[in-house]
Amino acid sequence: MPPANPPFVPPGSGWPEDPAVPATPVAHGAGDVAELAAGAPDLHELCARQSVCRACDRLVEWREKVAVQRRRAFADERYWGRPVAGWGDERPRILIVGLAPAAHGGNRTGRIFTGDRSGDWLFASLHRVGLAARPTSVHAGDGQRLIGARMSATVRCAPPDNKPTPLERTTCLPWLAREVAEVAPTVRCVVCLGGFAWQGVWPALKQAGYGVPRPRPKFGHGAEVELAPPPSEPRRDPVLLLGCYHPSQQNTFTGRVTEDMLDAVFVRARDYR
Ligand code: SF4
Image 1 (cartoon, rainbow, N blue to C red):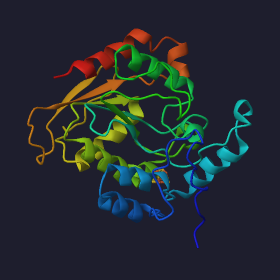
Image 2: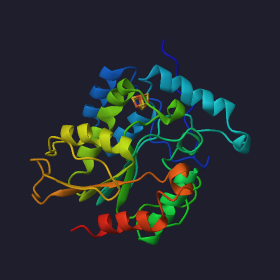
Image 3: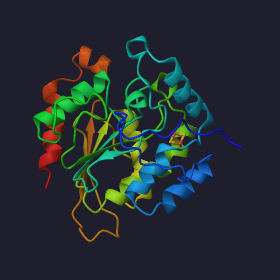
Image 4: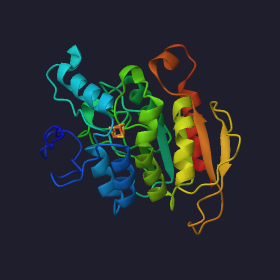
């Protein structure tokens, strides 16, 4: 009998409303992920299935260990300790893709880019340009709301050293690919936060039916690629893929990323067609 996920979250806990129920099917390997992602009837069920996934042994062990050990500053908090599902508008114009949740950020709060320094920069920028209701994203019950935008990640579990292995990225790919396909009818722009997200999003876009160029364009801050939409979409105008340096502490401390640089990317995403 495989180990179970941590208990399902009671309402009012301050964590995101749990999309999963005890009957939600749990993936225990790459084949399960592909099957459950493809078979999810809608975005809500897709997120529910993502949130209980146990397909990557190393990441399951790590996310749950971090949730028990905790950081001293959060010693009195209960950590989410599960995969962090995509969140935001269900019919977004903009899809924002990061690499993976942070060990003491998304893995603690249950919401991507929430409760960490990168999120402080990211949400401040999104708020300045009108894509987030509040300038901060502290915990899942803080009233934050994305406006016409959605956030997701190439890998849904916090990895040691922020480095998922190639196998873990491949195993997690069907979750993102299906999410990309689900929101394709409304998405006009995909913003990739950092080079790893840029690399990781290409196979998801391809699986979702987008026309992707060969060779793949290089990542850079403000890099732009126009993609042919999936043939199944009635709209034929291109979708914009935008590169954005990751608002990591290293990048923001050193000035590699500034507020103006972030705002410029999100203004471009907001105003694209
Ligand atoms: S990284 Fe993705 S595939 Fe691996 S356990 Fe987490 S949610 Fe599942």
